[in-house]
Length: 102
Image 1: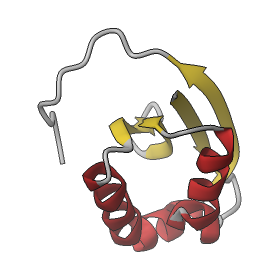
Image 2: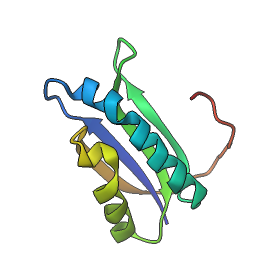
Image 3: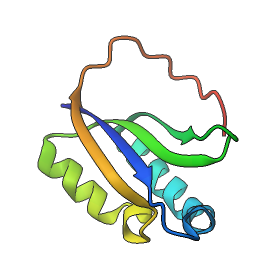
Image 4: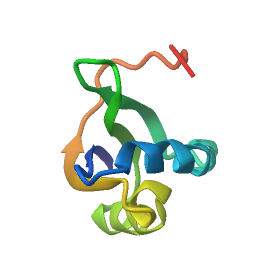
């Protein structure tokens, strides 16, 4: 099953700095999930100034319980970066695996 995860950052003061401090752990976690075949695509959402304000992921996982298990260990969740997380079933129609940016 595919899932779209849309996660907005906390509006708490210091969240952006916490995000940037935790980002290496998040990217390491994403690399492991990608190696396991779970990540279809992922990226950051930007505010009007181009500053990260959240993330989106499209993941292939067996079921919603697997999504919840993934989120329990996601560094942005553990370190309180993401505040509002929405999960929807998804169906990827077009996929281009070339990374666009780092």
